[in-house]
Length: 146
Length: 134
Image (tube, rainbow over all chains, first blue to last red; front, top):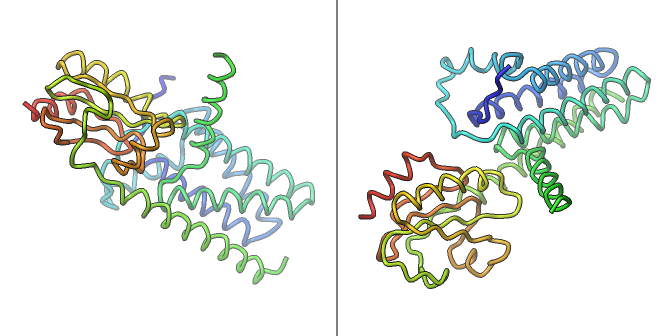
């Protein structure tokens, strides 16, 4: 499947709103609902990372409501850092779900809250911490091979 | 954990994240293009228009912009000066660079006629901007 190299900056921010809302609901709901909400959210994010925009449920939802909300096009950004950030989020949520299932509720809650905070940062202000981590790794990788 | 305690924790985390996001957003929003650029700062004697890119080590968008700027520089005889804000904090402070890339289009008299903050222009944008400097 052909992957676009750039993404409209409004899309990752809109997806971040879902990445904030659903783990927040899971945290509030507590077990046993929490582990299933986190699991489903993590799987949706993982499918977006692995399958691209066509398999991004949150992205497709945003595209469907975007005209109604009157949100215009954003600037184009490189997609790789956002995909990396989403992958990190998916890993955290799937790990949190696994911890809940294993009975380790507190570590699961901590992981979920980390995703909530970072997703809110992205949704509210467009500050993508995962993207910055991607750039750091790229830089160190370049330095290691130089 | 009680629901009330979870709600309190969630609101605290959410409040801290919201405050941080707006504080940082205000900082980046206040970034503006400088009005002028002194080509002596990059030791350039070329008299015509020029392009300036302020970059930083973790700036992916800067890497995206660079080949476009190089191509526009060659096509329009406008030298390109790339300034790493980390290596030249004096120039970053002089021109109040708050975000990277900051890309400037400078005319022959040192006036910044257009530019881009935190984004990479298209080839058409650059052509149009350089045409305005003539």
